[in-house]
Amino acid sequence: MTAKHLIDTDLYIDLIQSGSSLPIIAQLYDKETPGIYFSSIVAQELLAGARSPSGRRNVEALLVPFERTGRIVTPGHQQWREAGDMLARILTLRPDLRNKLPGLVNDCLLALSALGIGATVYTRNRDDFVLLRQIRPFSLVVVS
Image 1 (cartoon, one colour):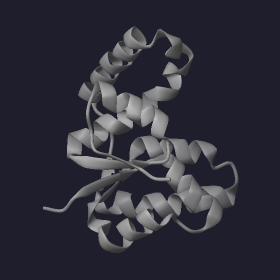
Image 2: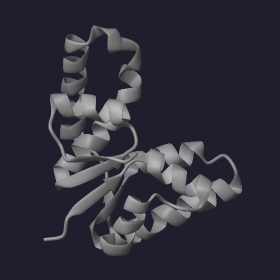
Image 3: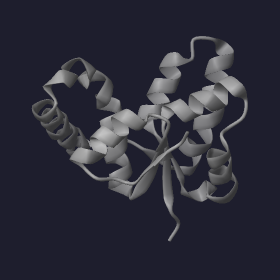
C-alpha cells in the first residue's frame, strides 16, 4: 500500500514564489507522486492568493494534475462536525486563543482530511498543527 501525503498551503506558496521546493517536498514528488493528494482547502487558499494571471497559472499548474487523477481530498460533513468539536475543545482548554480560532479552521479541516484518508500532513506551521494534534492525533511532518 502506498503511503499518502497532504502538503499544506505554506509549502506550495514557497514553491510558487521561489520556483523550487524544499528537499523533503522534492523527494516526495520524485519518489511518492502517486501517494500525494491535493486538498481542496489548499486549492482555495492558493487561488484566493493568486491575484495575477501568472499567479493563477502557477496554481492551476499545481492543481490540475491532481484533479485529472482524482487525487483531491475535500472535507465532508463529518470532518466539519469534528472540526467544530475540536475547535470548541481548544477554546475550553485555551480561552486565550479565541482570536486565533478563525485561522485554525482550515488547518483543522486539513488535518481531519488527512486522517480520513490515512495521510501525513506536511507543513511549516508547527504551532497550529501541534496544537491540533494535542486534541486529535494525526500524522504530521513539520518542515523547517
